[in-house]
Amino acid sequence: MKKEDFRNLLIDLLSVYNKDKIKDVELMVDKYAGLEFDAIKTLFIKYNSRLNVNYDPTKGTDKHVIFLIAK
Image (cartoon, rainbow, N blue to C red; front, side, top):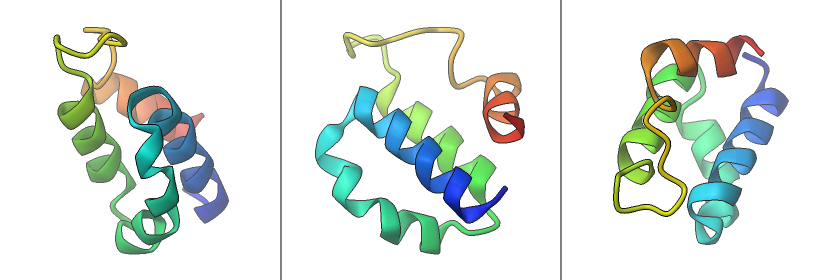
């Protein structure tokens, strides 16, 4: 995954789940370079819980994360 694509995906996801963390995107992009699947999967595990108003049980599955990375 290209660095710019990873950055944009993180911004999109954090815009939904935790806007306060958008300021940390550059650090996340550098820290998780080459580990995009793990970073995105972890983000969904952390934020896409039943307690979150944006909860969606179809998001965060391995298939969904692979789709997002490929897209």
